[in-house]
Length: 443
Image: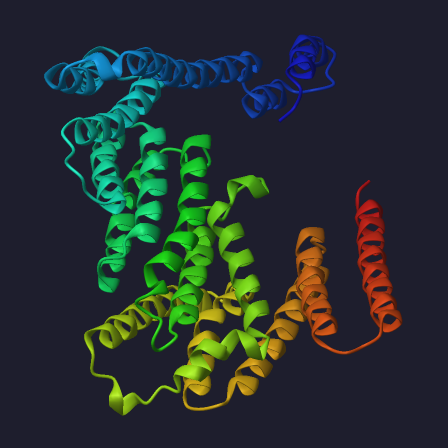
């Protein structure tokens, strides 16, 4: 965005430029539409400052009240403790109703009250349970808290309760231990927040609120998926298949939803999905990365238990969903999406190969070859389009694959040092050539 002082200077000069015939009136009007009102940037910053201060203020007030009550907590009777425990929840619920009636258009009020109400829910549950010694497990507390926080996000159209909900279900997936299959409920819980993401971004998907929510969703989904399938997919070693499908879904869905994002920060799903897919490929390029699958020595005729069925169903559903999205990219001939989206199917093929016996070396070789093809293909695509970011991405993939192989071998430090220097020279040379070509094209 242009500096507002420069925009104001331009607007002061436009009448003289039009009067002198330097610019036509239509061109001046197009400039005004392009740059917009310079005072809007300041007002937007002020609104976001009010929102942030309202959230911080709500948290500080709640923390101060808790500290004051904690000072005399042991001297209070049980009914008084219960009343005090429920009071913040009742107060924030009343504030929420007032916001819905009188302050629906105020983002500061909605976010502040939503944050306070979400924290009050957790505090009330914990304090009442502690007062009456109700017991219970930590995963039950996190699940109850998260489920009660989500309605606040929908009712108040507040982003912070949705962010806390995503973190809550991620923590729940990592703490649930009473039954292996129960952790798979993480995926329906994750799906429950997707309508809110679509709703918050339907007017402007590049607004900071849906972008921030998408960042949190992508990051917590990676960790939450790992927690959810850790015990379920332990016997057959299907975790790489599920995680590979998730990476592809994040990347391809982000490419659809945020395809015209003007900056890297406004591409949350693409960035997290691409980095996760490349990171998974680097791990699986080692034979040790397939050790869990190879050691299981999958005998498909012996798959009979419920846990085996659950992990096969999870792997099949995620892979099928990735295939549906990937086919559309293939039909549109978007080769960058096609190349990166192939990770899911390669992981599935490598899982089958490695699970049929001691064939982990073959699966690792497939991913070494894939990384080379992905890096070279991305590099060539960037060179043809003269896109410096794409070129650097291709070079980064190639460099990471080569460096991993050097660390994996018994080569001397001299050879490794020379390899690092050659890769660095390649980065600098290609960037200098592209920058020079860009300067030659520009007038």
